[in-house]
Image (cartoon, rainbow, N blue to C red; front, side, top):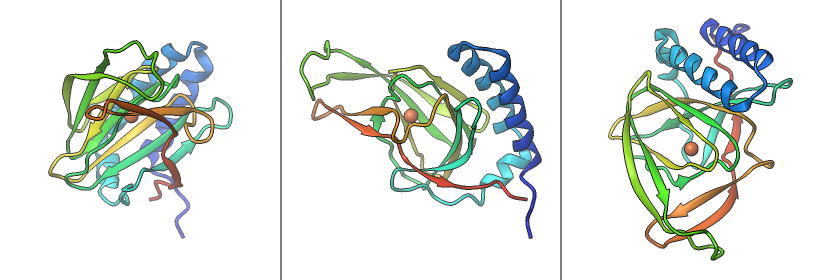
Length: 195
Ligand SMILES: [Fe+2]
């Protein structure tokens, strides 16, 4: 019977908890957490482990850790080849998004209208960063972005400053239709990095 969690992941959670205990400002906590996530997603054992993670197709996230004391959440996303992500924000939550396997395209968008018309949003694509293993994108509150898959399977580990399901409504944008809707974050599938 498996009783252990991947040691690199246990060490990662211990370090995140130390950061959140030491710092009180959410932005500062997430900047330091981003730096620690860079170390995790470069870890060969974590990268190897991610090769066996199940697909999160259908707006799901693997729930790797929810912290009872500090409220932060660690998720994983596994994209099948050719998978496209929606354009969205994470409301007032911070997100650090680190690719550990395969490659992705991390897109940012800018809002052009003033948001005064309900359901209407004009957005413009501004930048695309190539997300390769070891690259972490820190997404601030309300930043409009998309993570796009590539022609290869890809995996990412995500730190969220709080759980997005049921508590935080995020926005999803359709750049062509110029619409925006509010909806809950992805479905959470409990998943342990067992060894
Ligand atoms: Fe996102």
